[in-house]
Image (cartoon, rainbow, N blue to C red; front, side, top):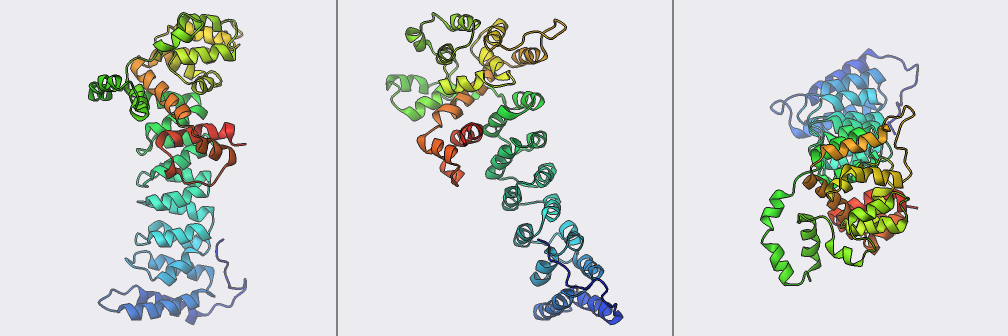
Length: 401
């Protein structure tokens, strides 16, 4: 909380007090050629003692006087930054010499408006960003996201991605941050609106051509070893060009993925959804996430990545019992949006998105991760890999009960 003024409402006005406060502030502001460190510290101690009972206006005047100093005495900084926001504001806005220690202390012991002013400062550090985000104040987080000079750590970005689930206003500002990576964006996708989803697909649905060229000679090596190394096998499954699982056809009651899609038109049962998932090279959990998504755009990604035609989207849409037409007989806006998504994204880029979802929503779900999701344990994110952290963010809403 802000430090309350110790001055009574009707405190008497002494000209001598005002003059002395001004003189002490002048001495503190003298260059080092005029006053040594001990003299400055002694003067600062006197000034702190007087400011505790000084008027609100006097404290503001002193704060403004100290803004230009390259080194403000710590005792003065601590007192003034913890004061009412009108007193702290000149220092928070204009004093470039405040340290992270000063600002962290202020953030922890004051209120939202102090933290908003800190978030506006030039060059907010990674550590300070993390501290400010922990308060989960949307206004402060949004201010940080719009501050081009603020520096976000990976942990801070993940925290903001999680915060967007509770407030969609943060997503557009987050998408403009250079620190946002595909790992974050593909998770953010699941609870974003149509505009944010379109931006994510346009910006982060990248080609895997460079990876395919770099790892081209590794595929025969892994095949010669019988694909026994699980780590390289999962990575190569992400990189390879083929999306459909040909081996799954031998075990499936359907002759092809197209046949499974045709069967889904009459009602997408759990069994049919699982077969479509297997035939598409997906784990059932990834397929379930795609089929139950209320927006429908993941259906477009699935169909484009697996080489299915536009009609397949309509078949799945019908099987999910979603309206295909609007009251005026035209195509429903939701279906039209999904068909547009299908048209705008290239096959290889759709495969990148689909495989990242499959990688993060299935292979990452270790027992420890599921336990953390269910129990809401206070764990360190660094203990988990990138796909595990993605799964934590995407699934915690569903399993965190």
